[in-house]
Length: 128
Image (cartoon, rainbow, N blue to C red; front, top):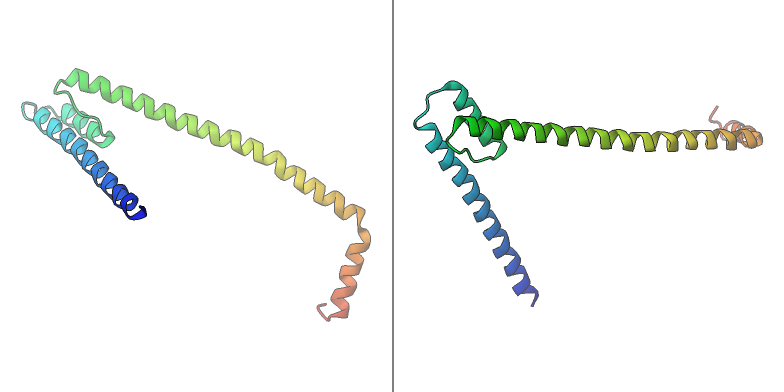
């Protein structure tokens, strides 16, 4: 039974990789067909950026330009959301670190004899 599951998993991975290849090749074919009638450098740049983002061009410069602008806006929003999330995580971590430091300082203040014992142990074992 596990052999069959293993084979099914391998087949599923193979099918997924074929589907991904098909999507990429479809985008490439669409880009090449869109480039054909155009020699506008701006449109060629737009097509190149669309391909980098994995978006299939339509063949119409204004449509592709708006697709690219929308994709860039979404990308910026994702980046900003991620940065805000990281800042929130940092704000959560900072109070915990401050609490640990204050707790450690209070414990050291409560145990002044421990420091004396540590110093005596260093002298006894010849570490000083």
